Length: 190
Figure 1 (cartoon, rainbow, N blue to C red):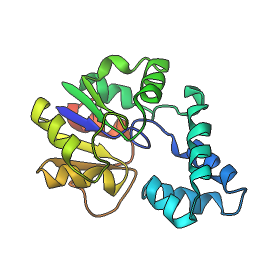
Figure 2: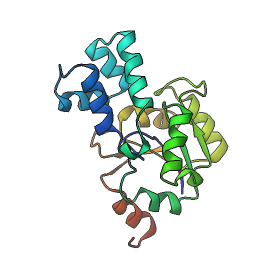
Figure 3: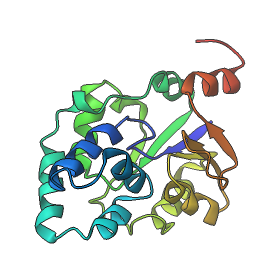
């Protein structure tokens, strides 16, 4: 199986700490549950919703860059799926330096054949350009993301899609835990 992964909220449980960052920048003016729901649509959606200034956006990026990788752990059992897959690639809006720091911290960098990061010059999702590139090079079977914006580019180019911990009715498959996915694709237990 050849898999295209989103990073934040799909491979790594980053939303709790990102919610805390935005809560701090907003000086507690919005409940964390609302912030999380806005971030789960997209960062751009949250920025627009809260009417964030350029200074606030820069502050968010500064705070995110200062995070220690231990604050953004991988989801349970995702490594088993990564080990099993024939090819794993990532498409993320996160800067490459941050992606690599987290992957290396958890010893997961070795599982990825290629990464398209936010500073690689591709248009942002849902534009399919980065997905076209990765799919053309690796003949991918499935795109896994946690938000609709993560799977729309895959659908646009005819790939199968999977939403993780999100029941929005747009994907071909749905997952809540990687342990269940591993059992399904291997027919065995962890």
